[in-house]
Length: 85
Image 1 (tube, rainbow, N blue to C red):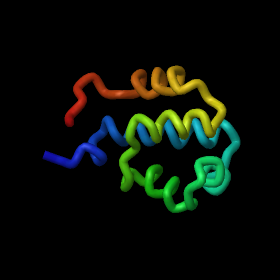
Image 2 (image 1 turned 90 degrees about the vertical axis):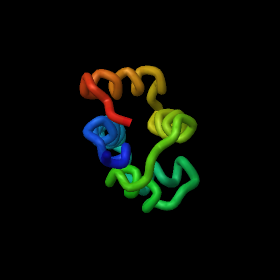
Image 3 (image 1 turned 180 degrees about the vertical axis):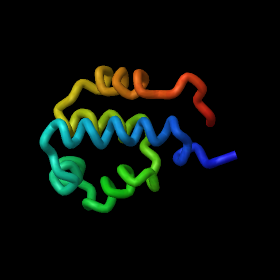
Image 4 (image 1 turned 60 degrees about the vertical axis):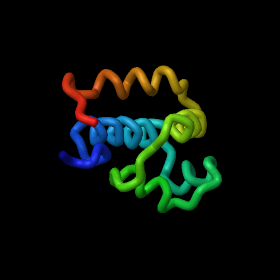
């Protein structure tokens, strides 16, 4: 069984986060600065190397000036019907 960060569901999650950042007109460097993290932190997330927990997701949404609930809704809409964990 594959590690969950490499499943199609996790890939969908990462795509939504990455698209949200780009749609907000924010670079990886800017997002990292807003979060008080180095740029490779964001790169690792967007490459699917580093998993994002719930609190990090919330912080990322807020740093992008997005409603976390709305962003999570966008994630849910992109998930496949069958999600492996």
